[in-house]
Each structure stands twice: as structure tokens, then as C-alpha cells.
Image (cartoon, rainbow, N blue to C red; front, side, top):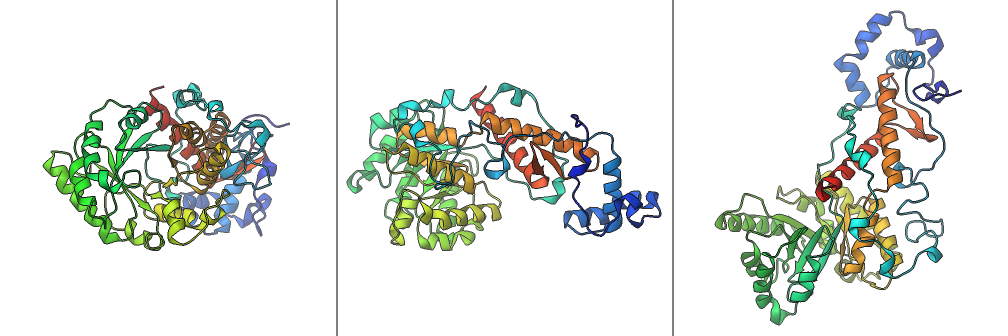
Length: 439
């Protein structure tokens, strides 16, 4: 019979060629004990090197340990190794697993069925009140993810439409983007700058960004000079295609910050990758050493640029999406923001698109209508089942590691360092969301 806290000895990974019961050829246990504490052995473990004597010794110690992790049974794994349970926010069938909700008959296409952000996926308080120290778990084996304040939803609002701006600032998006680019006619662009400056002084509870016109237009410089001032959180820069262009805007922002008495790099800068040239240059763009902490993907202009058909299933967006996520990680910045969903009547399509983006590694999604916010926030907020599983993983692995094991089962699923790191990351995200919402 298995008990909580007892090591399941049948869960051990086989070590080919080592007779652990006979000691694996060990003749001096004290010497091996000293060796596994050494820098040389730590280096071998970090680099997945094999040292049969030490591995055998560790295995013997693990098998003889009287305490370890529970081998919990039941449950199933969802995307990214997280137990999704019955209420997971992105449960799909095998029809088109990455794009369609599991049972369309159980979902309506009206926005009224989706809760507001304040009543969104419940993050049980007990998960926040209890902090788990897990930084020791093989932390030297990985490059840490940047510490982020999760941004799930960015809502666009036309800067020249005062009523829509006022409404946007009262909603539950994590950030609002006042638009000076595509949503504003050429004849109104200059006049809209003054309206945006007025909006910067309005009370709000979310971050406030302005999308200026592209670098190669006659409006970009004037947009920046007009709107960069106290009250602005960041700039959205469209159609970024070169490292030099991004570096120029970063330098200009520094000068404007200085003129307005703002701190260095206090204005965030989010470039949008939305052309073939921008995508092909993304590594160089992100290597410029600018203030950029995250980038965004714009599928509308990208598909236009490459003469691609933007379908409901979005299979054609797989390459640019994964390319942007991978480049962001390689550059050491936050996960990117996904493109908008343009079919306002298709809530199921929006949810599927958001779930696909989540599964590919995006941290949030841009929105173009208030009804999209609850869906996007829900998808990018960990569910109660995911949180519970992550806590069980972290707890069980901490106990197992103290007993000398780095491979266990939780809910019948294999758990090692990568799964533990993912669980840690999820719990950190939950804590950050709770802290921002003051719950």
C-alpha cells in the first residue's frame, strides 16, 4: 500500500548497466559521498553527464530513503504538463485540437455568457497565502525566465473617439492602447494627438499605451513628441523591420523623457512584428539593447505583406508565432503578445485563437472590442485545477529531491525538472495576478 510521503520504489528510472542492489561497483561509500558534493559532479549533472558510480550511489540512497513524495493517482495532463481537469479553460477535442472548443453545443457565441474580469477564473486565496520555496530545485540547470507582471489583454481604442476612449478606460483589460495609426484617418492624425494627451490625465486602473504611426511615416516623430509625458505607460510601435529603426526610437524616447523629467526608460516600448522583413530580422531587432521587454505579433499586416490567407483555424500563423516566441526567449525578454481576432461575432474562434497562442508561449492577446476582454483574460488566467496540480507537483518534488530523487509521479504522470519549473512559473504568475488585483 502506498502512503503520502512514501517513495514508490517502482517509479525509479532504470540506469542501464548499473546493478544498484550490489552497489554498482562501489567500494568506498564515503569517497562517493564526498564526490557527489563536489563542483565536478555538479557540473556533470548540469550538463547531463553520466557518472555511473555516483548515479548508482544516489539511486541506492533514494531507494533506502524512508520519506519522499506521494505517488498520487488519477487526473490527466493538459497543455504544458498541467493537470487540466474538467474545468480547464482550453479543453479541446481531437477534431482540430489546437483550434476548436471541445463541445460547441455547450458554448454560446454571445459575450453575455462570459464573466467579467472581476468574476473571472477564481484563484483560490489559499494558493496565495501559502508560499512555497522551490528555488533550490535544480536552479543552476536553467536560465531563469525574466520576472514579469502578466499582461493578458490589450484593448485598442481609437484616439479620436472620446466616448470609446472613456469606455475603454473603465473596462477590465490589463492595458488600453489609444490608437493613432490604423484607426485614425490621415486628416485627423495631428488633431488626435491633443485628444490623447487629454485622455492621459483620466483616472484609470489599467496601463495606458499609445500606438503611434510607423517609423517611416511623416507622423511618427510628431506623435512621440506630443504624447510622451507623465501619465503615459508605454508606446506601441508598429511595423518594426530593422534594429536601427528600433534603436532610433529608443534614443528619441530617452531625450523626450529627459525633457519631461521622467526617469530613464520609464516609458515602455512594444514593437509590433507584422511584416516578412521584420520577422526575418527579429533576432537583430531584439539584440539592440533597447528598453524593449516584450514584442507583439500583428497578423493582419503580416498576412497582407506575404499574400497569405488568414483563416479561422490560423494554421498559417504557426511559423511566425513560434518564431517570435522563440526569438523572445533567446533574447531574454518576456513572452510576446498575440495578434488581434477580427471576427467580432465569433467568440468560439476568439477562444480557440487565444488558447493556441497560450499553448505556443504567448503571455496575452490584443483585443479590438470590449466583449473580447473576458474571453482573453479567462484563457490567460490559470484555472483552479492547474493551480492545484502545480502546487502538488512543487510540494511532491521538493520532498522527493530531499530524499535523493529527481524523477517521480504525481497524479500518475511522470515529473522531472522541466515540469517542476513549469509549475513554479504558473504559481509565480498567479501570485503576480493576485498582487495586481489586490485580492
